[in-house]
Every structure is written in C-alpha cells, then in structure tokens.
Image (cartoon, rainbow, N blue to C red):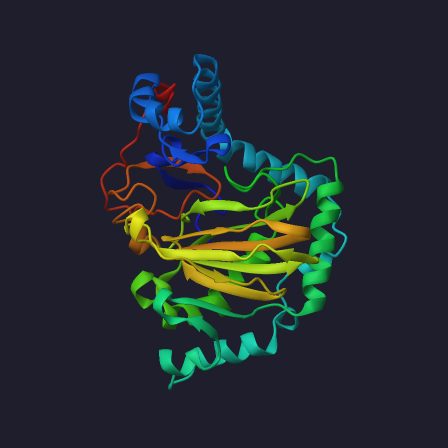
Amino acid sequence: MAHGSGGLSYSCACFYTDNIFIQQYQMHVSFTDEEQFTQEYHKALLSRGCRTPEKLSQVLETVKKEVERRMKLAEESMQRKSEISLRYKPLHPELYVLQESFLSADFLEAVQFCQSPHASLDGLLNLLDSIPDKRIYRLPVFVPQFCKDFVEELEHFERSSLEKGRPNTMNNYGVLLNELGLDDSFITPLREKYLRPLVSVLYPDWGGSCLDSHKAFVVQYSLDKDLDLSCHYDNSEVTLNVSLGKEFTDGNLYFSEMREVPVNERRYTEVEHLIGQGILHRGQQIHGALPITSGERWNLILWMRASSVRNKRCPMCDKEPKLIETVGQGDGFTVTEKEIKVETVDMCAVL
C-alpha cells in the first residue's frame, strides 16, 4: 500500500529548507534565514554571475517563495486532486487501472524469473541491458500502444483548465500522477506486483524487497519548455525512468557515481532513452538529462521508497530524519505507535 494515500504521513524537516534549486545559477541551496544564506552562498553566487545587490535580492526572493510553496504543497496538492476527480473527464479511462496487456512481454518474463525459485542476479542480467559497474539497468516496460495512449491522455489533461502541480523544483512541465488519480489503481500495483520482484534481485541492499511507498510523476521536455535536467540525485531508494515518447532526438541520460563521491572523481556514462523502455537506478546516484535537440519527450518517473531504509537516514539531508506530520503522500517515512512523539519543527520560523 502507498503510504500517504489518506490521513497523516511524514516528511523530513529538510524538505522545507534544503535542496532548493536555483535555475538561473544551476545551484542547489539550503535556506533557514537570510544571514545563513548570504554567508554560505554569496561567494558561489558571485562566481556564477550574481554580482549586484539587486540580483542577490532576486535570488533570495526566489528561494523564499520556494520555501513558502513547499509549506503549502501537501494541502494544495490534496485540493487539486479533489478538484480533478470531480471535474476532469479522461480521454482514455481504461488506462487508469493497470492491465497486464499494458506491459511488454520482456518485462513480464523478467518479473516471472525474479519470482521463480531459481531467481538470481546473474540470471536476471541475461534478460536486461546493463552497465554493471554503475548498477544501471534498462528493459522494455510498456507496449507501444500504451505509451501512445498514455501520452494522449496526459496531453488531454494539460489542455484542461484545471490547476496542475509541477513535479519538483527542477521540472517545470509535467503531471503529478497521484493528483490525476492514478496512484491506487495503477502505480501501486505496478510497484508491488511487478517492480518489487525485479528490484529485490537488483538492489537488495537498497531496500528492494521492502519498497512500501512511492512518488510518481511525468515530466515533459520540448524546445519551448524544459530542454534538459541538471545534475541531481532523487528522493528515493530506487528510481524507474520510462520514456513514453513522443518523437525526439538526443536528450540521453547521464550517470556518474553515488552522491558521496567528490565531484572531481566522478566519471559519467550516457544511457540512451528508447520509447517504452525503463531505466532502473539507485536514487542516490548522481544523474541528469542532456538537452533534446528536436521533438518532444514525455517520461514517467517513479521514485520508489523503503521506510525501513529512510527511517534510519533521510536520503536528502543524510541525517536521522526529523519528521514533520503532513497530509497526502509525504516522503515515505513512517512511525509506529510505540515510538515517542514525532519531533516537529516550527516552519514559520524559517521565514
């Protein structure tokens, strides 16, 4: 079951202060107050062209607005989801419940192998394209007709007048699939029934066998929208990235080592996007997307999470999580009745 489908869920306090992306200067920053921000980032911003008080003031305003957005995000997302469920009429309603016919034969074969008594990593690698030294794997996930119909559905939703949430601070165009009503009937069974067996074999050391929540969204790239995606790591234990189409050139993904490897020691590898195929990788692996040079690309991104892993260490701040109660999906953290009262942070103090 996906945590956060209803009732209270939890995020780490760092969500409201850390990993804020400044697009203009291609920087991730943290913000608790103006003094901290100026002391920590003034020199780096100067080196990237932020050389006047006016420009620094603009950056501060952008960062503060992002903090405010995050504070309101869960409640506003729930409101959008409710409004969409009442007013949106799907173009392809049959897509909203996962069917095995949507999935490629190669994908189903790999899943079946992982569920068999003789499942092994060596055997599974015979069914996948892989970059073993980086533990990146690619295989077909969806059949072409599903990809075509799903992109049509997403475009139909984009044309509606309904308010839409953006996937994250780095992707300005796309769809949050829980708001569209796809979580319980599509994404959750995809994760539980099909992806968990695969990931259990590929990433047992990253919570592969105990994935219990997710965040799912679609991102859109085109020449008049987002072209590329800067270096980053995901708020996930394992990520699936599926190319849905349409027609495009270039825009390969690139991967280096895990986030703890120093920048000057990272070595990058490109992985080509193929329509219908998914790329599996560890969320803490540094990666990005090169610019597309023509056409339009839609990608389904599934951040898969294991509370047993992240309850010990938040993957975004690399510390024991300080949990904040929220509504909606949260970020995959859990608490039990036996645990002491969850530590809370007064987020109003941030501003």
